Length: 128
Picture 1 (cartoon, rainbow, N blue to C red):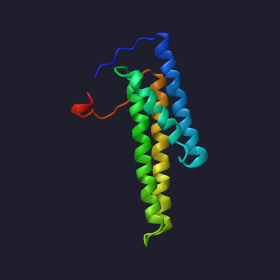
Picture 2: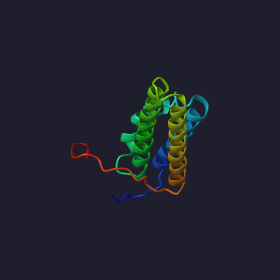
Picture 3: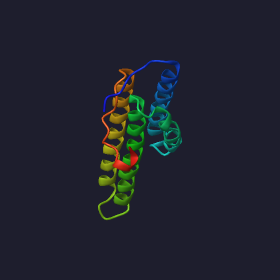
Picture 4: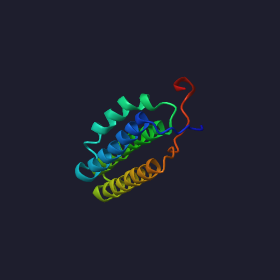
């Protein structure tokens, strides 16, 4: 999908919101292991419709998907910690999930500052 980039006051405001949301997700991962990331997630869900049709919409999708996949991997680590597999595997899963989340946030920051859309999968037909 091609996105038209126009830099009016509304676009700049939405871009600033996204920057703060990336920062909120990053702070949550650094200081609470991602447990407080639901706060910027709720704002992502509230603000994403206002960016429909722009490259900023893909950044909301990117952050939302990163949150849910991070939660899946953390849940897997918790399950592994309480099974016979043990704590070392759980720590390995958690470390991998943390590094993956950090990668997604850094890539998002870079793409946002370069005014580029994020590579996100196509939406199902009913969401278009």
